[in-house]
Amino acid sequence: MTMELMSEWLASTGFLFPTNELELARFEKLYGDEASVMSNFEVDCDRIFGKTLTAKVVSFEPEAKPEDIVPLKMVARKGSNLPKHIQDKIKKNQDERNSGANSGPEKGAE
Image (cartoon, rainbow, N blue to C red; front, side, top):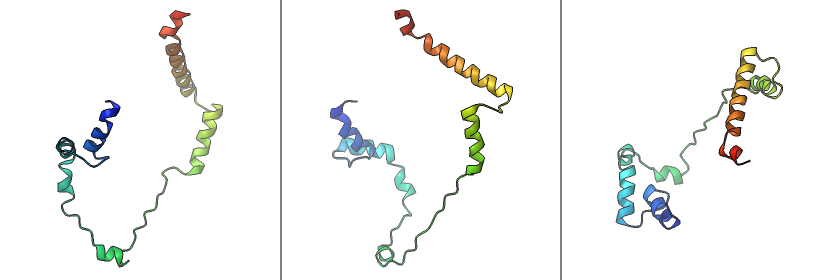
């Protein structure tokens, strides 16, 4: 991928409008089956411009409640009240990361 080809690939993938047959062919290859999904889609301009279209309000409810998250933050910060097997697993993961970082090619160059 080069900067010269960037606009060509953006047009082929649908981020820009295709400008030639090659870009259009690539676009159709990627998104050709999307036309069947949208075949029953209709836009009622009279309802949109006449303001008779009602908006659908979708509310978002987070899965976790804030009061459930606070104890987890405390454990992450302090590490207290963790079972021994969890503490051992955390230490093992940290040791593996530290040993992997120290065994890189930079160590031999010192």
